[in-house]
Length: 229
Ligand SMILES: Nc1nc2c(ncn2[C@@H]2O[C@H](COP(=O)(O)OP(=O)(O)OP(=O)(O)O)[C@@H](O)[C@H]2O)c(=O)[nH]1
Image 1 (cartoon, protein in one colour):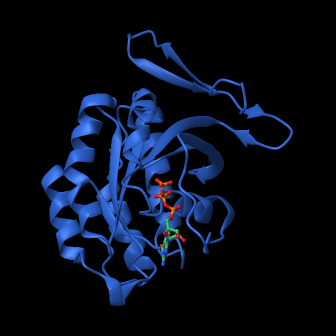
Image 2 (cartoon, rainbow, N blue to C red; image 1 turned 90 degrees about the vertical axis):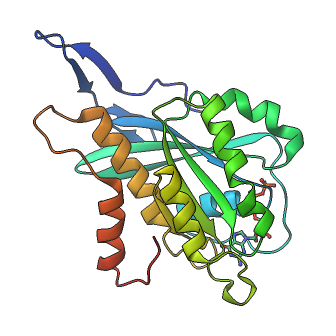
C-alpha cells in the first residue's frame, strides 16, 4: 500500500469558506491529484471481487469461487475533468464471520458500492440490512450506489430490474445492473462515483451541482444500452 497521503489539502479562504488545494502527486507507477476510498459491500458470492477485477484489469475471474478473507484493496486512477482521481477500492468479505473486521473500515469510506446478485433472492432481500449497517457505521454523507450484478445470467434471474430500481428509489441512491463477466456498466458505476466525489471535493460555490442520477442516465443513453437504471 502506498503510504503517501491523498494530495488534497483543505485550506480556509479569506471569507472563511473551505477551499481545496490540489497538488499533483507522483510516484514511480501512479500519478494522481486527488484520492478517495470506496468500499464494496454485499453478501458473499454476489461478485464484489469480480467486479473490482473487471474494473481494475478488464478481466473476468471465472472458475472456482474463492471467498475473500477479511478485506483487501486495489487502486485505480481515472481521469475526471482533467484531474487524475485515485480510487482506493476496498473489497470486503461478504461472509457474516468477517463483519466485525469490516465494520471498522466503513467510517473511512467516502463511497460505498452495495451489490446483490440478480440470480440470488436472499442477496437482494439482505440489501435493507446492509443499508442499515451503512447507516450505523459509515459517514453520514457517504455516496451510496446499489448494483444488481450478474446481469448476463438472464435465464437464472430471480430479481427483476424494477425491484432494484424501486428499492434504490426508496433510499434515494443511484442504481444500475452490472456484469463483471461481460463488463456491462462496470466502468460507468466506478466513474460515476469518481465524478461525484471529485465534484463534492472541488466544487466552487457558483458551479452547478453534479447530478449523479442524470449523469448515469445520460451515459446509458449514449451507449445506447437498455435500461440499466
Ligand atoms: N455469470 C457471472 N458470474 C459472476 C459475475 N460476478 C461474479 N461471478 C461469479 O460469482 C462467484 C462469486 O464472485 P466473487 O467476486 O468472488 O464474489 P464476492 O462477492 O467477492 O464474494 P466474497 O468474497 O465471499 O464476499 C464467482 O464464481 C464468480 O465467477 C457476473 O457478473 N456474472
